[in-house]
Every structure is written in C-alpha cells, then in structure tokens.
Image 1 (tube, helix red, strand yellow):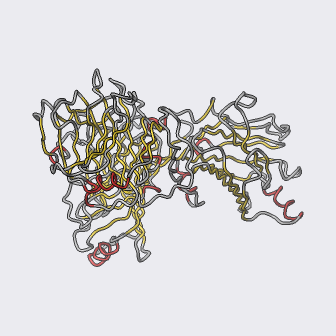
Image 2 (tube, rainbow, N blue to C red):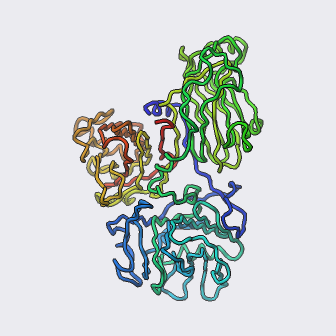
Image 3 (cartoon, rainbow, N blue to C red):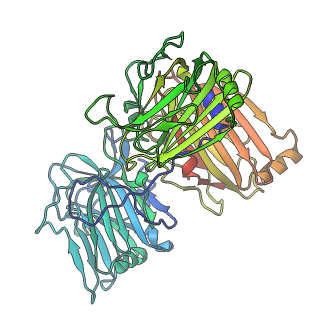
Length: 619
C-alpha cells in the first residue's frame, strides 16, 4: 500500500457524493432516480445523538415520562454494533439542535430504528415542538406518518395508519430512516430506498416549525410507546447528501468498512499477466479480472505494459467500462472502451472528452511513443462521481518520459455498479497486486469536533469512529483550530483502539498520539517516531503553537500486517509544513481497528470530501 502515497502525487481526486431526488409519488419501495437540477444550500450536521454507553447524551435529555433503567436506557446492540437508546413506556426531550441555526431551504433527520415484536403504528419516533399549546408541532410515527399541527392554521396528516399502512418499519428488524423536509415538500428514505414524497401545501410553515421548536421529543408524551430502539440520530441543516440517506442494515454497521470489504470488487482469482508474453495475443482474446466499481468510489490499477514497440500505437493496454454482467451476458453492454493512444468507442464514448499531457502531435512523436511504452509503468484510476466516470492513465516510461491521458463521460444514472476490465492487443500486461485498490469516502457526521471557542476539556469531544480493516489505509483531513497560546498539545489528538466503543467491554487503546510528538497506550512504548520540520528549542515550539492555528492536517493511517503507521502532514497558513510519523505493531494484523480524533483546548473542522478509506483489491 506504500504505492498509494506515491499515487496521490498524481493528483487523483476524491469522489464527491451526489444528491438523488425523485418525482412526487406515494410509490413505496421505488429506487431513487438520479439528481436533476437541485441546488444544495450549506449542508451542515448541527447535532447528533450517538449514544456511547457512558450516559453522555442521555444526561442532556429531560424525562417527560418513564423511569431510567426501566422505561429507557442505553443498551449496546451487538448486531448493529452500536449503543442504542431503548424506549419502552417513556418519552424524553432535549433542546432542538435546529433552533440555533438558520434553515435556508429545509431540514433533515436520520436515525436507526428497531421495533420489538409488534409495531404500534401510532408510536411517535421523533417530534419537534414546544410546551406552549399554541405552538406548531411536527412529528413522524412508525407508519412514516407525517403530521403538522398549529392552532388556527391548515393542519395536515400524511400516511395516517387508519387510512394507509406503509409497512416501512417491520418488527424485529433494524431500519435506517432519513426524512428530508424542504420548503416545497418532504422526501422519506427507508433503508436507502425512496419511500414517499409529498408536495403542495405550505411547507415553508413546516420548515419554520422545525426551525423554531424549543424541543425534540423521542417517544409518545403519554409514555405509550412500545419497546423501541433508536441509534445515531443526526440533524442536518438544509439538504441531505446521498451518503446521509443511502444506508441499510447488513449486520456490519459500525463504520461500514466491513461492508466495503465484503463487497465483491473482483470476480475470480487474481490474474497477474494478461496476454501472451511474446505479445502475440489477438484483439479481444485475453482479459484481466472483472473489477466491479460501486457508485461514488474510485479504483486504481497498476501494471507494467509490455509491447514490441514496432506495431501500432494501439498495441498496448486497453480498458473497457461496461454494465455489471459478463461479456456476452444478457445485460452486458459497453459504456466505452479506450486505448493508450487517445482513441475509443462505445455507447457513451461520443459524448465524452479527452485531455492529455506529453502525447505526440506528429508521426515521429508516435514512433517514439511506441518505443517508450515498452516496459512502461502504468497507473489507471477510474473515478465515479454521480453519473460521471473519469479515467486517468499515467504511463511512466523506463526513460522517465511520462504520458498522461484523461477521458471523462457520463455512464448510466450513477447508482448502478459498473465493471472494468483490461484487454491485451499485441501486448501483455503484468499487474502489481499491491498497486490495485478501491477508495471510498467515509461517513463524517460530526463535522466540527470540539467547541469553536477552543474551550473543550480533554476527553470530552470526539470525532466519529472510523473502522480500518486489515491492510487498508484511512485518510482523515481537517483544519486544526487552536488559540496558539496554550500548550503544544492543544491541537489534534488521535486514538487507535480495538473495535469497540469507548467504555465497551472490548475497548482498549493501542495508542493515543498528539500533534507534538508525544503519546501513550499499550503499543506506544514499542513504537518509533520520526519527523520533518519540528522544532528543537523553546522558540521553535512557540512558533509551532502559532503556526498550528488554522493548519490543514491530513492523517494517513496505514495498516500492513500487524504494523500501523500514522503519518500526519500539517500545512500551516504561512506555508510551513510539519510532518510527524509514528509506527508500531497493533494486535496480529487480522482484526478491525478503530480510529477517532479528540479535541483538547482546540477544535477540528472535518473536511468530509477528503476523508476516505483505501482497501486493497487482493489480499
């Protein structure tokens, strides 16, 4: 995986999430179509109720009815791998996170829910309201019933169970619910599928009610809710992204990395050499593995390109991007096929665009190209962002000449899995197993870690948990905010732990490290440090403290067998760069580990677009 750090220098982009919106329809279970011309306005997570088993969130909630430990409690769920809030004859309320912000065009809430044994469709899951009887209220029930009430206004009720049973929440099953309320209607997603949409009426009033309600209530105020479990309740200002709603229960929900690893990215055993080694393979006779690429991800391949150097410009590598079926299958079709010489064809080819660096413009240049490509090291990156597919191929020749070609086009609606495979043509390709990996963005729900006035005490403010499977890499990017006048340690802090929540029975810390070359933990003493640019005297550390105000930080956490290496690159606003690197062994290398960040007299602004995990395609 060390190759990946080199590949970053080639400027590959991370994948951006896209928002999907459907036409208005009560058609439950309909797959969500692609985005149209929707405009997003300042999406921001303004609050999360992620229960930690320590009572941290629960302590911020007032009891309306019920007895703690009997009618409500924090309960660890092994299948969801989260600590949940159990409600059984209770109602809790807490301050409305939306009340302190401006909602430009809507509000959204997402959460996991499980209803034990039976489902009382009148049970309220979440309600925005106030104690004043004349105030507006808005709530959602287990029937996905959407209710808005305000004295003296035109009230309404969507999906009343007396009239229509939606079947959204099935008993004894975990479901992921995402409700988007906009100024022109609402959209509900259940388990990653758009379940219902409604427009018309005065939805501005609903958004206003959500914005100005004093409290959020969980459960029925009369305490009648049946045994129900809630987890990871998240409040999102304005409009959700696809990554907010496109989730479903798989039994491996903590962080998603196990899901990523279990997805069939590669079909068949590793094919190292594609094509006859004497370069005699005819066109469309020798193929690589099929590589399956899901939406909003990128895949990188590395191979050595062998060719005679005396044939055609096309006698090198070739790449096909197709539907998710085998060649010749009923559902097989080619979006496009491209070659190493800026040429291609296929259903989506004509609408695409090319760019290149270093490619020739005359016959003599092409003759040189053919010779240069003998033994060239080639890195091909296929990136998906919505319906857009971008292929960037960088060929570094043995004489250090570099050719870069880039092709971009639209393929399908962006939601489907696509396939990639390579073809030899009077050539052969020798794949580097270590240079083939998939890269996906990780979910970042806590976008600001720590109080923005840098007042957060140690071990009080945390990022999300991020799982890292064996032999994978995690990148976390954020802006580091601090007063610049405190201690060297009043910046970012990173914990690497076992795969359990803080305080859980299986929780232990491999190590915790800080931005100032210091740390502790079970595996810390056996580790090694190195650094670039760090100070060696008091004056230097005083500059360090000042420089770290607003520094752009990228933490790369790399696993190779049992070895974990953290490389932190801190680029300060005055262009000073500090790099610290810590390496140690954690466990046997086969287990999933967790990473999370901690504020300490600081706060961290997470850059969700640059937070990603890279997983090798081959063990």
